[in-house]
Length: 312
Image (tube, rainbow, N blue to C red; front, side, top):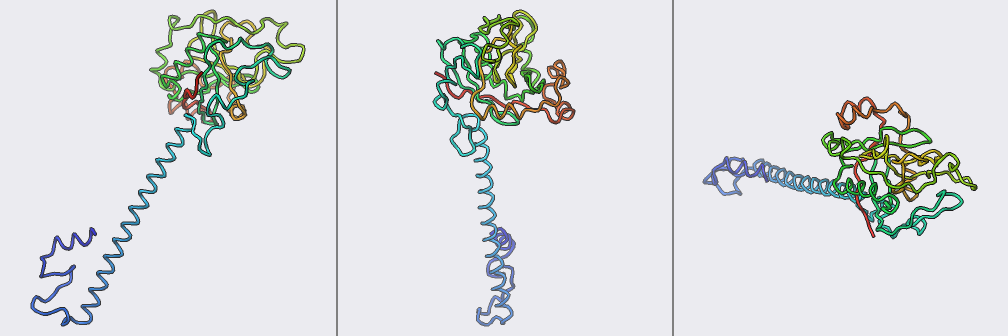
């Protein structure tokens, strides 16, 4: 179509036909055999080009549609899509009674957590190694739970938050925003939270119970801190059952936990090779998840975003 238009726009009707010279006073039947063949070949060439152009257009449309669908599926992975590649937990209805309202047992929970007298929430976080489904229990630690949910609502974790201090068989610390300006909202003591009451049994005599259940269960989430009323924007998640965490440090009261096989698989995939020698906190606060940090710590994992999926 483009070639034909160009030819016609540069030709005078009646004098030229598709770029082939015609005699103005002779009928078509008087054209030479060679001229007729050349005309047919030209027309076939133009037709073939148009068909090819149309197919190219359709293929481009397909690629665009396919890319758009892939992006939508990526978003739905956090939002609770029911696609085949979506998360295994899409709402609180997908959880067992024990996951919704846990109680002490022979294999987990050294004591029963506080009963849920406030609405609980399901948050799904996308990381570089998989999804983490988190149940937030405000009755466990009201102030700590509220701040985490606020950070989720404001898309804080979409800044690409580094899982910066991950020690094998112990814990993973995270929370410093990938965009430095976000951290300013939490700098200074005036932005620190008051401590919530610890519901875990404290002291060295309560590291395990008579059944061998350890105090701080794998998947528990609490804040990182450094003294009384020091909780801010940094968190810890237990990579294994731990007997020392939660034993008296006021910031280590759990406010939620990861749930589901998918989440625990993700915990096991988080890279722990840097251990205590990951990117320094001060540098992360200044640079965020900068190109230089990613180059220096190429195997570091990140939280890419968290979404509130369900609440009741």
